[in-house]
Length: 436
Ligand code: KE4
Image (cartoon, rainbow, N blue to C red; front, side, top):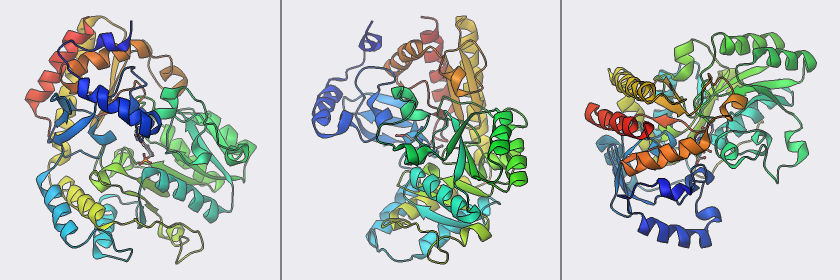
């Protein structure tokens, strides 16, 4: 059965098909990022014309409730008035100067005020740049070369990290990517997420060679896998004991699961943190930051080199400032928690009533519905999910006006723009679909 047959017959996608056919002659796979090509669910991707609040509007006139939110940034909803106004105002003063601006200090102050472990920060243009730079900094600071990452965790596409990565690579079934030379990953050690004993064994094997552990404190690129009690705490203990740095990759969880990210929820202070997505409000921003003594190694004050033409871009800073300013208002995360709880409870009831092997996982305003009959605690288990069943669910929800991430190995997001009626509509759609 082709995935197209899952598409509800009341969805017209002909213009998207036309545009995708043309795009494939111009762009590899017709997209500028692999997961957008819908290969995780089959069929052609939907081309988006515009977005407003909780809605996406595609080129065929279909409207969807958006649970992807550009993979996390649009937590306020699309074209949020104060963010839109800030970007328009900034654009009238020029787009890019390649010189310092007060906006960069303003956003830095907001991030530092929101995340206590951040004493100093450097803005870049993507999460990939943030993690790549943070790891180079950890190697410079410790004088060591090895790093530890976890299978199924995705930290962007720097060579050293494309080993058993999750996200798009997992969807494409490539345990590592062609073009990554062996020496680029020779110093990258892999452990299963939630397996702190394996990490301890790596430290015992390489006691003075490991510069850092980089971890998604909630693994959100293999679906959504929560850290088991004690796992993150053990990583903090091991890195302190062996003189390595602990890097929290909060590109996804930062300002998403709490104002202060996952580190606020678990009360752990990493040495460095990577950000992206929300701090740019939908414009290209990434960042890495943390202990001042470490960050002082970054050029030009220090010798560890990292640079970027558009880093700290004024329009991106304006969007980030407006977004974080809104999120710092009282009650925002209580509202997100309420909406997320309502949705997760509704989806769990739908799963229960359907008597199928599926489970809902949620933390803060992130959730995932696994088609799986066992608790998902790492990538090996996650990969045993029923991806064909997920594909059917994806297309049937799309036909009912609910736009979910086109892969079992991604997380869904909840925005402040989704009201209770929309959440109820989503639960109703899931109840109908899961029974089929
Ligand atoms: P970017 O380079 O895509 O801005 O960020 C890389 C990155 C780093 N760390 C984490 C935890 C991430 O989730 C990401 C990117 N997330 C994916 C979504 N799973 C982006 C979507 C895409 O690749 O198009």
